[in-house]
Length: 267
Length: 319
Image 1 (cartoon, rainbow over the protein chains, first blue to last red):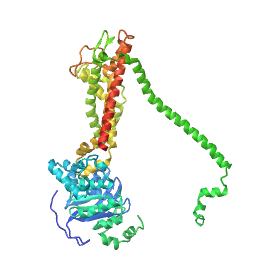
Image 2: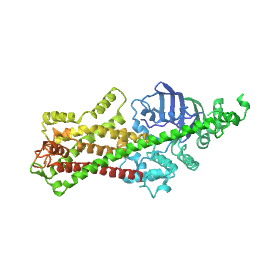
Image 3: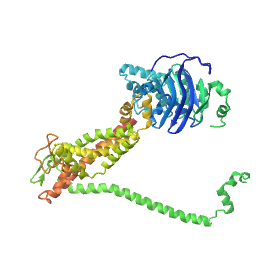
Image 4: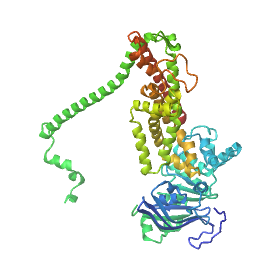
């Protein structure tokens, strides 16, 4: 895939950063059921975009299209394009495996491997071919520092990852994803299984991470979207209803449907 | 109409009570009381039967063991375990049988494990639903139902005669291996299915290939279950008589096997031989029980090793 990044100035929603990812006329089908309909969305470098909407509106499905995770579902079908740095990731010659090392994912329920903390972080590097022990160790430390977990686990890297608390496990999963040095980080309701203190730590983390990565986060929690994101996109029944700068969307939404959802008239 | 009443008034049960208060000797209470006693009695009866079934199940093993030990322990001594039979097998030991059974069981596992585990990985991780998959599953399930003596004849025809292996450990191990395949495949598939999909997703999300995911995450996590299947398989293989009767085991051989193309004696076959074909059956009775005891001990011993190793693996994963 080509590596050129074009800086594109978009007048709406007012971002000046280059375009990192975009979907064009994306339709997604589970068998005969159309789960996503004509979604056109843009994501800018080093910005946090939140996808909100009621249950079943397709936001997680959309997120999983971005790193072709939905390929794992046999009856799924995609129409349209998703562009990473201008190249369609669904083109026939695209290597999905290397795509997924450029786009990392953090899941709803923390899912560390039943291995040691060190092995968990090193996993991504090893499968991508890195062998040099010193480099692996350096990047493990760096990833854990980035995920704000290093201080808590630096003395027990050889303990099993399953012994960590829920919040620590999720930060471990974030570190694990970062160790592969992706360009984009997809987060699918990363805090929904965590207590408020762990949630807060991860939200602070997202603020720091966006300096280095482009982040797209699906969240059920509108207050979280308001706290954490620069841009918010509202989905409903498989369609993108409205997108805007977060502050604007939450205080002066353009569409009544958006306003109804945000004020809790339906959910 | 109901909306004008208060919550407690609209509650159905309350309404009934207001119409017909529950007194101690109300007809409803009497009915409920008698029914309750009957229901509890029925429950006790069923629980008793269920517990009885479980006890019978457990007791059966102990009865068999007790019987074997009582009748066979007299024959167990150092000579029995380390010497070959002499005097038309009325005296001596069963060393060649022990060696033969071990060789055959190990051979069966060496053949069945790689093929079985690979098949299970294919079925569970790679195969797409469709006609081919259904056909393969049909084949495996029916393989499990083929009578062991049919396996014996199959082994005779294919390995002993057609491939010219002769009556040998090789032919016997291949036949036993084929018999053990469904057990291995079943246990391995179950172990693979038990590995949560979230592990696979996490691995693929990091840019791993499917095989890397299986090799580095799924298989290690499924290992305890796979090993259990392996030991179950080897235990079954150790005790089978019909498949080895035509393919590996012989009535008597004066030497221990030196290559996989040698014929062997085997514990289960030896029991059969002593009990039916020897010249002095009554005299060899204690030896029969002794041989059976050794076989049971071997099988239970292998199961114990598996259980210990599996719990060690589990502890390591949980740490």
